[in-house]
Image (cartoon, rainbow, N blue to C red; front, side):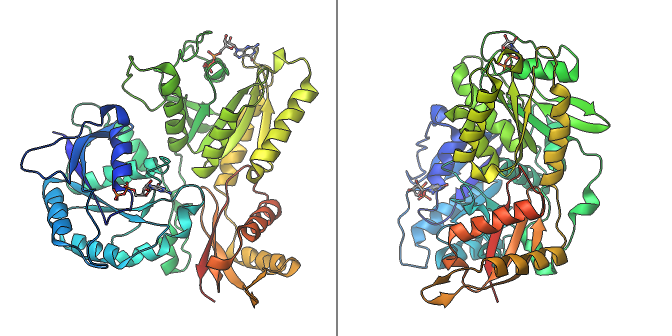
Length: 472
Ligand code: GDP
Ligand code: GDP
């Protein structure tokens, strides 16, 4: 038996978009089940290796503002009756509307687990709109972008959690329970909700010997398999000149200098090889998946080829997903003009990804092994920075100094004031500050704060998130 997910929420929050993403275009077979109205689509969906039936209730018109029309209620109820879990979407950009509140109120009374999903959270929007969602009484929202496919790893974990609640085995057919456990074990850290309890420090206690989850990604032929072979010292993966040769390989458990590491190559999480699909396509999807499941990502570049648009895209994705990043220049043995090669890389990074200032760049030859001893120390450092915690007192001292040095601007003739704050989360470092007019604060000023934070607290090569909450 597999399980069933209903995607519910008011019109326009992105239900269809999420449905399409879960189902995947290729197999988006829409059931026109007789007796069920055309308002509902139903199909087989998946996230990584988790498979399920999914239906959405898209196509409903907004009725009277603020209320649920009978039709909407009927459709949603029917979906809920048949589902094991409900995903309730709201539009984090639009914020919580009265109709979202109606939905939530009603879902809360039901007996199915509800996962609250804050949609349209791509990029750094992820945390900004999330606070008010707590008022819906459905617990911690998951930041997602249905359109861009971000946040699916979090959704995966939430689904596995919810299934446990209702006693359903997410992997009825196989021994994938270990993967579920693994994912479950990934501590995503305390969330913004903990703020209600005065910046509690919950993470510090749960830092035991969990393996560092490391993904090595890069374009085909960058040398990923060669590198992993060289590092792990086993011929676990076959290397060769054909692009995409390693796409069936999986995670390798390994230890570096006493640090347990779970190493994913690009194809790491795709358990079932869909051999017939085009290699090119798979490698992109695999990369994104690996990024989502990793804590630190090594972006491997072929130094002979230089950095290309696609590489920068991956790096950007790593930042958006909030992972630690190390850039590795492979095939250093084959480069003739090393200075020029390095200059090009620095230029491209500074231009395209200024938020990655200070990211570690390691150069080596995976083929000869020369220089690869520098890779893991850089990874460990990125991991450490990603886990870094700035004490509240030091943060507020810093904030006062930084605001004084360069005060927040006036907008509309009125000063914007930022009062105080704290780091509320690690992995990546996330800072909350209270501000009298958070919506008016220009992005450029947030970037200023971010850069100063990065420099003053020595946080290179990690995404930093800043949340401004109204309060004074
Ligand atoms: P539904 O009525 O709930 O099924 O919503 P749709 O899936 O039709 O989406 C409504 C609108 O929101 C469309 O214009 C989508 O392109 C847009 N949308 C959906 N997901 C996202 C997202 O993650 N980010 C952004 N920015 N827009 C989205
Ligand atoms: P993948 O597709 O990223 O896994 O790349 P592979 O590990 O299969 O390597 C692709 C090709 O690049 C193979 O022919 C390797 O021998 C070659 N290669 C890998 N690392 C190096 C290196 O450091 N120097 C040189 N010159 N060639 C390398």
